[in-house]
Amino acid sequence: NTLGYDVLCSKEGTIVADTRLGNFDNCYKAVEDCDLFLGIIRPYTGSGKKGGKSVTFQEFETARKYNKPAWYIVDKRVQWASELCRSLVLRNKPLNMSQWITGMLSTYRKMAVRKEKKLPKVLDIFGPDNSRRFSEECFEMEKFVNQKDEYLPSDGKIINNWMQYCGNLLEMKTWIKTNFGNYEMIDSIVNEA
Image (cartoon, rainbow, N blue to C red; front, side):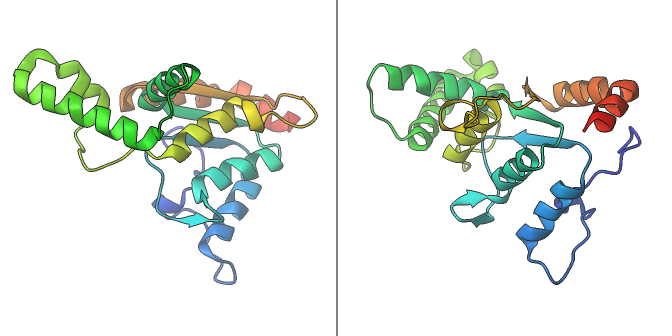
């Protein structure tokens, strides 16, 4: 909000809560009403699901449905895990991505504890929370944004959006400030939409 935008975010309490609508529908309405859409893909999705998908994923779909100018920030852990899993799948090794990644992270943490300071960068990459598991949905969301596989538009026309991988909060803030601080570009995008 320091850049002067009115940010619509349910977690921050800035979405109008129409009591005639449910929580999900209020979120979809906010996406429909916005001028610009910024989505964030982390290794974990929220607990709210409807029809097998998180509200976050459905907000991404709503932004696409209404052809909103969209930018997406993707946690680099998702990128790394996604690329690693794709390479294993290409070698015909069946796996449940979520369980495999969770087990692998646990192994790295145990190695780091045993060897103490030998693997500090590994711990920095994966974060301190041992209890969290990668959500398989984060990989689906990345494919959706990348318009890969089943998410390629049926007419073959690629939807314009931008996806940026960020490894930490400072990278995210820098990228947001660089792009959303360019008011001339943002005004021209909004006026074209």
